[in-house]
Image (tube, rainbow over the protein chains, first blue to last red):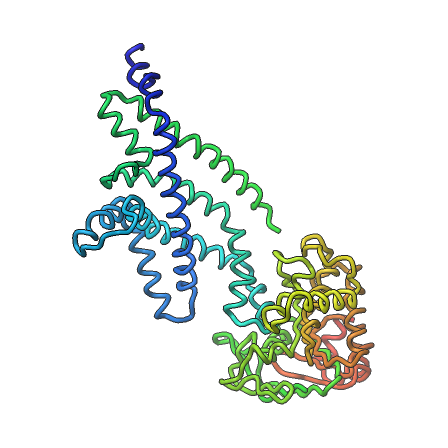
Length: 231
Length: 240
């Protein structure tokens, strides 16, 4: 029993993780999450509108992109962007600590969010578009001012769920060789497991995730409960 | 003001409008009645091209609405439409509903749009409800906001698509009252309705449709009082 405690909950080792666990690891996880979420939502919105477009030339590429990116393991996309692309093309990313990871996750989550946003737009009753158009609003204006704001309200719960999944999936970025100061929670903890030959850092890392994810899970539950009774 | 010529509309294999000819004069109030599925609503929706006619022509205020190159958005600003299900924008309060098109379509600045919006809300008896959201308003109030939202664009024509059918009976009167005022002020109106009393009192002309064609039309006293056509008689005997 003592052996187990020492292997998983060695408080001295855990204490040594501070402040880096917060100032580096959690900070970086949040930075990756934030920029990937923003990138994903922008890309997702563009893809969703493309998929709903009347023009086949827009619908088609968006559909292919969404299916391919959703069909691939996120880890493959991350490795491809982080290692494959620079080697194949000689591209050097600006802000190399964050750009490859954020880019890869934006590309992956953009595909997922596109489907969520599309479902949200389609869930807005057709009478809304008709009312807007009957007032002389062009299709684009009606989309921007009437449909999309309502769609966003509808997709807040599923989008929060995706934010949560994205937050956890930043751990996949641990496979990218990180530059100094660029480790997210998993990489930070994992490296210490090797250095200290003890599993306690991983437990601390897990707790660091839960500090963020447990309140978010509660939030998702509440948002879903609130959106359930239809207006 | 409105000329409909040889209008046909099919949904797939089903032909809902089978050759409609109708002319509505300026300041005229035309009530369209008929059994459900007769094509009344589709006729109305073809006039502002919410539905694309399969064949025929619609001319409103001298503009051929069905011409391929027509700026339909511009034409629609001169035609107000009110729907059975209100279709208010739920994310906007009453004033926001009324001013949105003023700002986005007519490019009015907010202060001017709100001034005109308040005026129209007051005109339909909703002074003090400017900041209420649709879900805080009764059905009758919502429908009056919808009427104000259309009127604020200063349309030349108003189209009403069974606007009282979704209302509780005690709320029908307030909406019909607003429509009656509008008719008295000389608005050109096409009203698809099941309210025979309203048609009798307010309409200049009643049009009876059945099965995608106009069966009979004329002054309300004639069409509702002494219909000549058997189908009209049978419909009226069921609803009156």
